[in-house]
Length: 135
Image 1 (cartoon, rainbow, N blue to C red):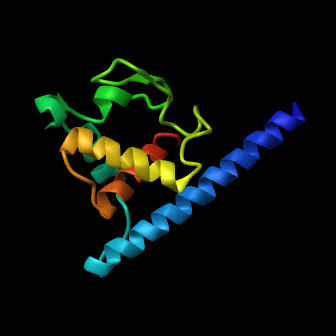
Image 2: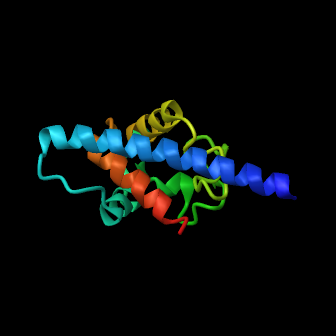
């Protein structure tokens, strides 16, 4: 039991460190074009995550179309029906453990919903919103 608790703490620290570094890098990127930028915003992230748009294949879609509102539960891909593991790092410790995977999925999901790559501020806002749901 102690080993499981220790493993959980290590995974939590790993994801926190990776996410903190990722968000700090995004913040630096945003500040290059907006020196007055103060920080990422949960409300902006929620709007990005929940608002519907004409996505790929001409279908109206939002992030919640696949991930749902409760990010601790599995979702289902809107286009393929494939099960998506929970987005919450609390429910799915594999989430947010590698920057390359964070970037890969943000790029794919922004393309699916918005038909474009997300800006550094949008990505930071969305990640901040997702993490706020674990508290």
